[in-house]
Length: 238
Image (cartoon, rainbow, N blue to C red; front, top):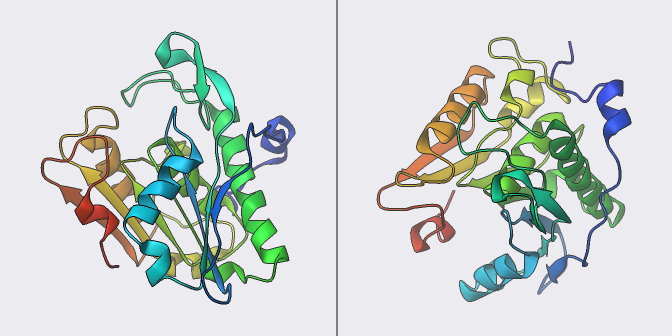
């Protein structure tokens, strides 16, 4: 079974994303033996999260890690009255009944997988590559890890949700890479007062991952946190 993989029909609608600027990168301070690829949220740029990681001195503690912060292409966003801004895919609404941009989500997922493969070509084993993201970026990351053929080091998903969740099995596992992916560490963090990606979205994502049998999936809720990150989230040890 292969319900979690991208079908040929879906592959036909996936096109190369035209990125408007190169990824912001923090090179490894010591020998490069691992990589983290982190995707920003709607309307943001990669440099913003580079500054966050830099501010908390994360690269100085993870000296062997190369940090990669891509910037999404500019596209019209339906939710924002068709205004053009950076986005990994279109957004139609803020509730669970809103239409999902399947084509855009698949494009973003493929783009992230291409970045993973670039790191592998540079000599980094997939098991030493971690992915993550905030909001839209986190959604793209969660989708990508379920459909990629690569085994990864882990996922950091902030204020986000699992998109196209109906395409994944709820009882029987059917993921690319098979049962071994059940041991993938996934940390999902969500603010209880998030007015954009509602808490319900995060909890439904938690149910989906647990239904698929992920053994190292952790969902953390934060009192007082809105659609943002916090000191507690950025400095968490997992």
